[in-house]
Structures are given as C-alpha cells and as structure tokens.
Image (cartoon, rainbow, N blue to C red; front, side):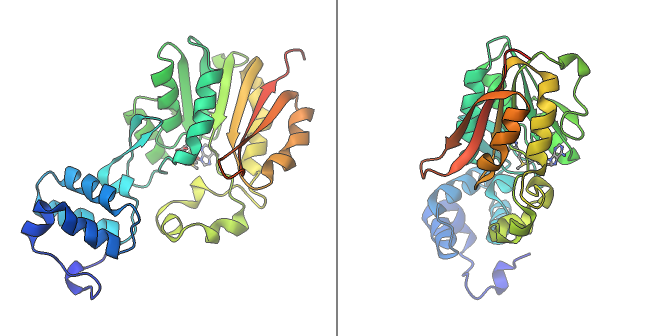
Length: 275
Ligand SMILES: C[S@@+](CC[C@H](N)C(=O)[O-])C[C@H]1O[C@@H](n2cnc3c(N)ncnc32)[C@H](O)[C@@H]1O
C-alpha cells in the first residue's frame, strides 16, 4: 500500500485542510493524474462523512489505482444506484446502450436472463424498468453472486445457463450478457489498473475472445422463446466473425450496435419465429 507520509510526490495536507476544503483533495487527485479529480474528491468526502482518518485511508487506496467504485461501494448505471463490492467487476457506462436495448426488448411481464451478471447491474436495471417481469441472472464467481444478491437480483452461481431453473426453457424473451470477450493475448494491453486489480475471469474470452460468446449463442435457443432477443456485448471484429454462426443457429435480424465512435460494441439477434 502507498504510504502517503513517505511519498515524495504527495504532500500530506493537514487533516483539517483535507476534510474542510474539497479543493485540497481535488488538487491532490489531479496531481496524481486522476482526470475526474473533482467528482472523485466529492465521492470520497461523502463516503468519509467527516471522518479524517477514514478519508486518509480511502485516499491511500485510491492512489494505488484501486477502482473508485470499490472504495465508495457503489456506482450509477443507467440511472440506477448499484452496490459494488471489492473484487467484483465494476459496471461500465459503455454497457448502458446494450442494457437499454434489452429493456426495450423485454415485455412488461416478460422473462429475461442476464448472464455473467457481476454486480447484477444489468439485471437490476431490467427489474427497475420492468418491475413485473421476471429477471434471473448467473455468475461463476461467488463474490459477484453475493454482490448481485445484495442488489436484489435473483442470481444463481455457476457456469452460464447451467445453474438456472430448467422451467425457464423456451419461455425467455431476452438473453443479455456482458460476458468475458477480450482475446487472451490482449489481456496485458488492458488498462494498468484493470490488470492490477480486476480478475482475468471477468475478461478472458479465449484466443479470439469469442469462446464464451459462442457458447452463449449455441445455448440460448434452449431458453429463448421464438422471436426472443439475444443481446451480447463484444468488440473489434467479433461481430463479423460471429455473423455466419448466428444465422446457422437460427437467429435472424442480426444487428451490430455501434458506439459514438462507430466501433462495434454489441450484437442484437432474434431467434427465428419458425423452426
Ligand atoms: C465483464 S464482467 C461483466 C459483469 C456485468 N455483466 C457487468 O456488465 O457489469 C464478466 C463476468 O462474467 C463472470 N464469468 C466469467 N466466466 C463465467 C462463466 N463461465 N459463467 C458465468 N459467469 C462467468 C465473471 O465472474 C464476471 O463477473
């Protein structure tokens, strides 16, 4: 852990200054290279709630690069406050458009599955938007399962569809997932903080990054109703690589979802109405 007292780059401000003047904390964070220093300072001050020693402890953690969401214990996703426990993947704003699309495809009293749910952010957003729908989720990591449960998600621990109730077979309107899709060789290229703090389990999608995406595409028709939607986050040229497989597996209306830079960020497909 970083010892503020010994760091030549950081001058430990007097406790009084740190807690009373948000500007001091903002400057400290900005000097350390945090881009959203003001917002982070506000979050840390709110979490410390006037406790100077706690504020120093939180700041020390942040200066190591530990994700802010783990330190303050929450993040906002699609306008919904999500609890985030240390060790659990922090939901990214880049996944919000895919989630909103999943909301649009979910009827008011429909059924949805959120695979690889992490904190349960997507499942929780679906439930918030469609309170009469049934939304179930799964994750293989016990910390994620505990966190999703704390977020009020009906969550099961295990591999993809394996732990989910078999009674859902053929009844599901939406299968959505931000599953691991980073190609194994690209893992070391992830942001330093990501690589240092988060688990490869959340990212590693095999040699091309498509191993888990393909497994989901293959298994989803067992759960989806005819006309139901499959929505998966992906990147790079993965959508092109998967398009033929989707058609072969009985999906139609395959649409690639792009971000504001024009990069492929997701894929939406519909299970063909007739076998
Ligand atoms: C990229 S994170 C996404 C979490 C969440 N969907 C979100 O967007 O915030 C991927 C998640 O997949 C889980 N995971 C990895 N392999 C899995 C598997 N075979 N079955 C179920 N969950 C898995 C990890 O534990 C991690 O929580």
